[in-house]
Length: 220
Image 1 (cartoon, helix red, strand yellow):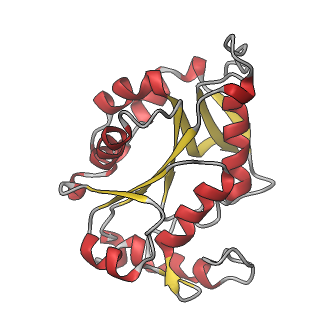
Image 2: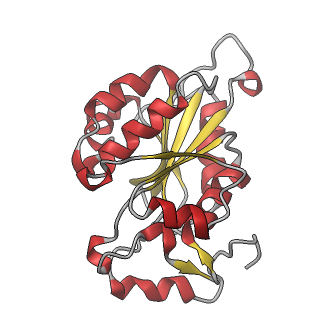
């Protein structure tokens, strides 16, 4: 993997802000058709926790891509302080939601986007902040790593968005792009501050009730 690149002529602290992009469109096929954004975490929809994590980690603005049961998500979840976009083709997979999100960020002035998934509540603001710190140090392609293995969140500098969107298909999202550009990728170890598990099947739902699981109000 590449080391963190040298900063641009601007000082790292002067780099343009990082937008957060939360992919929350999935229909929860393996959960029996329960949209993941609406899963319960301490009495609130899971999407609220995921969006808050991005903001607390340093993302501004935060955009959320909705899809399955989008109307119900808007009714039940308090997303009033975030930007939202709807992916009518969410059933085609994560790639379509990534394209919708990147299109929504066009013209935002953000220097980079940090992409996270709604179904990973074990990844909190500390991991987000570490990935952003690598960007502020000069890198423009960054991913959190867990015991050396690439995971989420992932950050893309703005100059990479068009190519990322062009290659985003099916459920692979940006996986092909990351594989093609692995020599440019900076990995930031986060295993000491986060757990990258997914809520994919009914057997995973117990994780939402674990003691110490993140709360939508920021408490633990």
